[in-house]
Image (tube, rainbow, N blue to C red):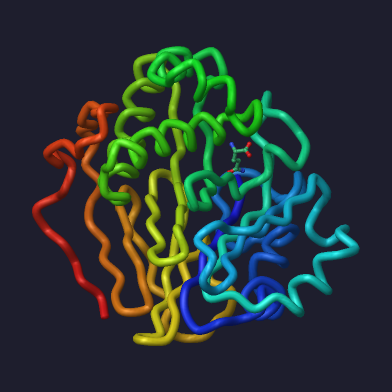
Length: 277
Ligand code: GLN
């Protein structure tokens, strides 16, 4: 499955975060060290980033392997950004090829990536698709399980759910629907609005590295062998800023989404929170 990462903090070039680390996302496209499913991530890649003062991100995505792109080196060197999210893709069988299916997906100021698969897609996903309004279905970014996952998450964010709760509820909802079809979903989700990084672990690896007050990195696997990388337990929800990282167990109860706009009472917040500084 794919590898992804998100960064928040002092402005950096994407090259510093993606390309220069010896085992960084660039190298993870052909030689990931911890990937649990699949071998290489050569079915495209994407970078999304925020310019300071602009809440809408920019994206650069291609369908080619990241190492085959002629333009990324220059872009990655000259861009400066306080917030980015990037992914290298190993396409799930039956999904579309092409840059429209390469993460990050976007909308409402968010950047989103999915490391995993909705088992049995598309046949097993009918019940999930039925949760979406026709307009959401018709504007899916790609014919890809991850586009459906993003649309389900976005529906909750638009209804006013807090991002960690929306992520937990989305994972619970998808995992339950797919299990009913005797399939398995892997749902490592990663999202940012340029101010907070939120992520789930549900079937694959995830790490964070906090330099307190300076930066935070959340990545499928460490980009180097240096100190500070902290593994996130499977089935967790993570929230990260340069000030703090919180990780809590992901419970699977999925509250119904209230599409009239008012946030519902949160039933997915786990009682215990680990605050890591
Ligand atoms: N299912 C997603 C896709 O096809 C993500 C795949 C992955 O994690 N490798 O792009």
